[in-house]
Image (tube, rainbow, N blue to C red; front, side, top):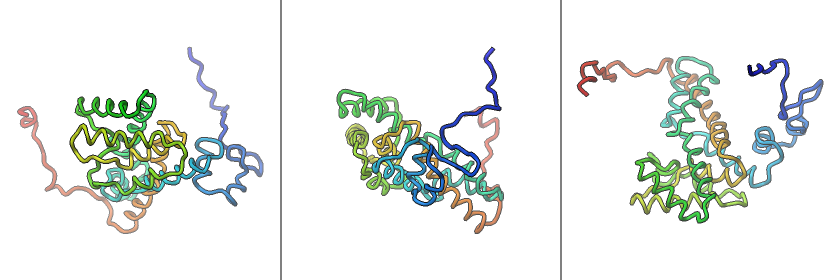
Length: 256
């Protein structure tokens, strides 16, 4: 039988708490409160170590870009509807984050990151990008991180692609994918923030599994703002009116 972990014993390298002392990854909390900035401190706690200038800049840009996309985003709708039941802000944020992580929403960034890593391992990045794009199109699938229902040109992309991280490998691959997609599809499909943030964070040294972690953290602040606004400004209990709901009878379902 597999032994059950002992819940009385824990190990962590994140925070060390002793009498009159708190240290994040070995750094006294008072030093961080006095002199630390948010991006550097988050990097320290999440990933360990002090980030280089390019890595801290990448994290800052990614958090800001992920912060909010208005009420049109499904995650925001979930958070606001939850808040309309008069649930507290943290519960509304949790609901919104569950929607945000889906591959058709914020999870698309991690999907793009996985493809960029695959292409980066190929002998020729331009050929690799074209092969990946063709493979997805042949399957009738979308290339995650490209095209947008509201933006012909996503205004977040230039700032993300302009990050100061020295390694630009994955950002170059993101551009190659954009060119290949437009050539193969015959459509003017451009990179959106999901692809750009994925490429930037990979260039900053993070792994693919860290992409949704970062964008989810950023979006949590925006969801909190929407939940707070809903609680303070709107009437409770948002729900569709009955005359907008179409009932499909079992008989019609069988006919279909």
